[in-house]
Structures are given as structure tokens and as C-alpha cells.
Length: 537
Image (cartoon, rainbow, N blue to C red; front, side):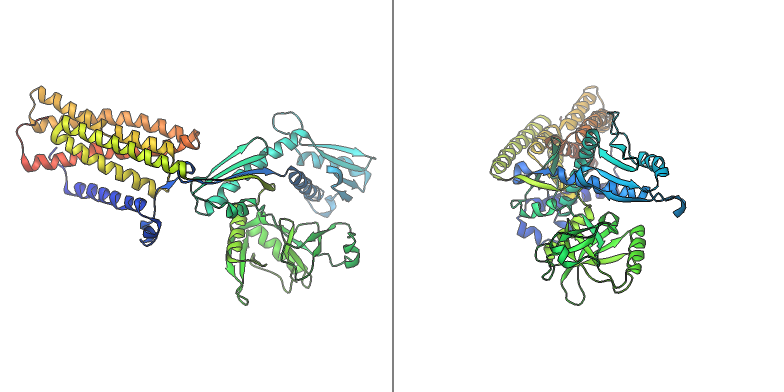
């Protein structure tokens, strides 16, 4: 018991000092905290139920999803009909159409119809456990192949799109630095988004409502402007309007339907500035495959124009003066720094697989949260005072050591939560109060065991040593089971349950450290300096 090395005492004291130091910013006003060094600005975030925030209900545009399905299948058909061993293995097709919610195309050589069907069977699959395929394949008029999405396939596509949309929305919100948003699916085609601390939902709506579907497509130079004004364009092309404030007077561009490269191949997107005009732009970089494709296409199209299309609107349509090598490019437009940064976040997080529209929005005020904080603080103070008094009355000097450890435990919990950017919710306050009440359980076990050893006639030093040694085993075993339970709540729970589990887990770890290690250090220093022959416990 007396063998407590100096390096260990210094290490424990340093941990306690850091705990106090890094818990202080949580209690400081925002203006004061922002003046601190960056490593000292971490604080405990408050959840939606305590700080208020924004609540949005998003609904998927299923018509957009069906159109995307058809466009993707059109690309699949073009790719599948190309041979794997060269041109000799190609299947010639024509009149490829996506009208009527179906994909149809003409197989020019009747002898290749069966081969074309086999290739498309490989490109379609079973829709979950329904036993149906995601696309029905039929042959009409001996040479026309028609692919029709099945109900089971559409249901599977909606489920997959909504799961993906939820993950992308989560990444976008966390890019803003907002912690612990609540993002859950509601029904088949809706997502609920709740962001604590964000009182104005306008920025949030702009960020998560943007599909961020980026495409690079060639401008059809063969299109007659007068015909295009009347809505008539060449086969394989379509009219795409400019975005608001774009186009320098032009209302639209006639673009090839085929996408030469898409945002799926981006690996980086950052807000930057155009060197000559110093206007905000978004600098993007493609992966190796995208860079090679971009270089190949631009090398073959020098002197022609290509368009950058975002969510079905043309941003710009510059001329290709020379091959664009290296896989880097800039997206220009009438951007502000904020809008360019928002677009870069959207592109980095990935395009939403389906358009999401806000059907309900409301601001959650922090008034109820403030009342909950005050009541939780009162409960915490009462619990702390009651525990401190009880330990002091029952265990005297050893109760003082337990109380010191309990106070440090509070600071360590707050500092740890701040370090991990954890969010404190109303259930988290309950977990905090519960941790304070249970933190001295270990000291009760230790002190009672010391009493038992003293009653058996052991000397003071030996009784303390055995008390800590024997009780520690039971303490560690009990708290390991508590940590396992808390970890399971965190893993499988969400929202309030997860908030409770976070605080409980941190509290268990810090309370074991303070109740066992810190009090043992204090007792060891007292025994070494005073060397008492008896202990009144």
C-alpha cells in the first residue's frame, strides 16, 4: 500500500488537472470560449431536447427515382450490347427509348435477339426474397426488346435509395460541424431530420435538399436553334435549361443524353477561387478511371463545347480548347463563397439517389430544454450534496477522500464528453445523475472491506491493503458487466437511449478510476506521512 511510485502519482495528478482544465470551456459563454486556444474550445454539445433546433420532414420524389432507374438501365443496355472481346462481339441496336416507363430497343440482326436477351438477363436480378426479377424482359415484334420494371424491383429500389439518402444526409450535416443529428426513415419514402442548435433551417434545407447529381455532357452542335426553340431536337439529345442567374442570356442548351463523366467518380471537391477573376468556384478531382475518361473525351472533342450539369440545370458550357489532363477541373457559376462551399460539401458526400423535398419544417425552441437543464442541474446538485454528506458522516477521513474523488469524477465526465464531441440529452442528464449517485459504490465496498479486516484484528496498513486488493476484484467485475450493457444500448439504441448510454459508459470508466486509483493514492500518501497505528472507520 505504501509502495506508490512518484511517477504514478504525477501521472494521476496530471490526468485530474487536465480533466478540470478541459471541462471549464463547457461552462463558459460562446464569446469567451472562442477567445481560447483551439485545443481548448471543445465543449459538451446539447441535444435537440435541451438546445432546440430544426426539424425537417423530407419526402422522396418517386417519379424522379423511376426516371433515374430508366436512365441507368439505358446506360446498362448500351454497355451490355458492346462485346467483351471487341467490335466483332457487338450486338447492333437502334431506336433506344425510355418512353412509357419502359426501356425498349431494336435488335438490328434478328439472329442476335436471343444473345441480346441473355446479356440483359445477366444485367437484371432477383428483387429481394419475392422471387420476382427487378425487370421483366420481353420481345415484341420479333426484334424489339422491352424491359419493364416490376413492382418488386421498384420497391427494392425505393428501399435502397432511401437508405442511401439517409446516409448521405447524415454525412452532409456532419460536414457542417453539427453533432449528433437525428436522421431516421419514416414510412417508405420519408426521412425525418432533427438538428440540435440550428434555429434557422434555411441553410439546412439548402444543403440536404440539393440532389448534387453532377454530369458532364457534350453540347449537340448539330441542333438547329430555331428547331430547339420549338422543342424539336435531334435523336439522342435533349433540351436542358440553365440554372437561375446562369447562361449569360441563353435559356437552355441542347445536350447529348449520354453522360461522358458523372459526379460518382469524384474523389475531392473543395471551394476555391478562379485565378483571373478571383470569383468563388468549386475545384474537383476525379478518380483514376474518371480522369482517364475525361482526358480521352476532351482530347477527341477539342474545339467543341461541353456542359456541366447539376441537378438537371446547366451551370456553364465552355469550349474545350485543349485536352484536360490530370483529372482536375473547376465548376464555375454565379457562386458566393457560402454557396460554393455548400456545393462542395454536397459533391463530397455524394449525390442523393432521389430528389428529396421538404414537406414539413418547424423550429424546436429551447425553452423546454432550458427548464430541463435547470431541473437536471438541481437534481445533480442535490444528489451530489447528499452523497458527499453521507460519505463524510459514515466514513470520516476515508469519506473525505471518496468525496474528493467524486468531485474529480464530475470534471472528468464533462471533459471526456467534450473531447469526444458527445451530445448531452435529457436522458443523458439522467445518466449523469445516476453516475454521481453510483460513483461512490466502489468506495463503500472498499471501506466496508477495510472495516472487516480491522474487525479481524489486522493492523492498519495490512487492513487497508487487503481492503483495496480484495474489493477491487468485485468492483471491476461489476463495472465490466455495466459497460457491456451500456455498449449494447449504444450499439442497438438510437436517440435518447444512445445519449443515456454514452454518459453512462463514460461515467462508469471515470468513476472506477477516481474511486479506486485516486482514493488509493490519497490514502497511500496519508499512511506514508502519518503512519497511524489505528484507523477509525
